[in-house]
Image (cartoon, rainbow, N blue to C red; front, side, top):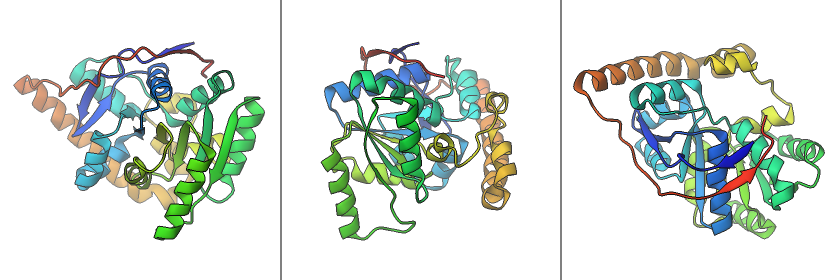
Amino acid sequence: MSMDDSGMDRRVDVLGVQVNVGSVRQAGGMIEDWIRRRTKNYVCITGAHGVMESRRDERLRSILNQAGMVTADGMPLVWFSRLVRRAPAQRVYGPDLMRALTAVSPARGYRHFYYGGPPGVAEKLKAKMESEHPGVNIVGTLTPPFRELTREEDEAVVECINAARPDIVWVGLSTPKQEFWMARHLERIEAPVMIGVGAAFDFLAGTKRQAPRWMQRNGLEWLFRLATEPRRLWRRYAYIVPGFSALAVREFLTRSLHSYPANASSSGPNEASLRVDAP
């Protein structure tokens, strides 16, 4: 499948968060362009959870809206974008984007670094990606402790990542922790791209099960995750699912009744192109 970034600069206002509309192919093309130009950007792969958290935390909303790209990680954001903007939005799921960019990396020479995940998961992910994609260059992994780092520890993390000279730093710290981390480190990490992918580390390493594709396509991934981790996730989804649904319906009706135009912005055209074998 051909990958390019045409159309990925269009955005839709999803309850205060500016979400880029497009596909995995287009998102990958934009990221490749950043790597080629050696600019510094971070990518937030955001679902209803991130949108709802941003409504409670203005700092998070600002971080999302200042990102180089915000993609729709879940189908509710895709459906909302299609309704209010009639835009050809598609889901850009963290594991799918990670697979696609990993697949092209042996030919392109991209260097990857994995930061985050539970203990041992980043190393398992590295071994699996190297097995599935011979020649991929994963230049380092680092799993921080589950607490706030000291200034000295944080400086050591930055030095470790920069010494490895990655093109892409994959950040698996969960929302909103990973978004805050990427924003704080944008000027200190020398890699052109940081991408927050949350639980993708666990899914791709095989330490957690992914929802079947039919559940993903129908916006039911939350139900699968709740069934597999009820004690950890029930509070989250008890707030997110009804809250996002009610706000989205209200916003759609408001825009329809008042002919309110979707808030769109553009980050300018790019011309990235690449060949990938995405799932």
